[in-house]
Length: 319
Image 1 (cartoon, one colour):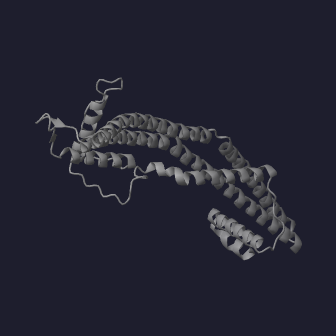
Image 2 (image 1 turned 180 degrees about the vertical axis):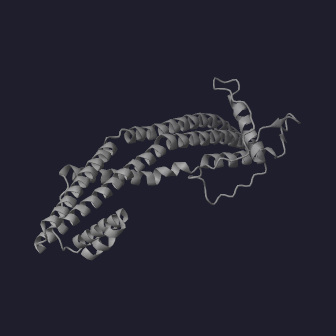
């Protein structure tokens, strides 16, 4: 050790840093091997904060592992689905919006204008169902018209025609629900995922400060060990004073690092944003499910009316 100090002292500050690093690593190795019991105890407050921050870090990582799902649009999209529709994306989107506009016409519902959507197809399960239902409805609309024997040339509504009507209703509803899901996802990413990601970065700063404390503590114990060894060897007063001065500097460094780490850990633990963003996470889901429930309730009512007509006509043909 003495030889190493003499070698590095000739290269100035860089040599001093190398010496300190060597002493820290040597002290760490001695502790791992159980060759020293002179280990500086850190304050109880610091140890308690360490445990609390570790628990918070674990909680943050656990939730973020799944919450990041909302950053991916196609998280519920069928991986095996190979969509091949006869209509192009713009044409199909225009058809859906036309159906929606027709459904809200002459009602108390907000009127929807038929528009041509961007050519990109949203990759969500509701949108996939909507496109499949719309394509199915279009296919049924290609069947030949059926005329009534009594009236002659006047077309009548067949079961497949009414099934096509139901498919139209389903396509419009699922498209709306898919759009609401995208709104939910965007809200969750902005108000929760991003906030908790930043919070995780704050936790990492506190963890980094704790590593600085650990290094400072190892450095101090290394210097104390060197002082004790010098005293045991009977070194001169000048050398002992130099060792004592190094110990004092190391003590000041540890105190400063500990205070900084305590401050950063308290800042993390006192931060109200994680709780606020978690509440926003739930509100975004609530808004989406309310909108979906409202859409499905209207769809159920509209479908029930058509289904009732189909059943009544079926019974009439069997009576």
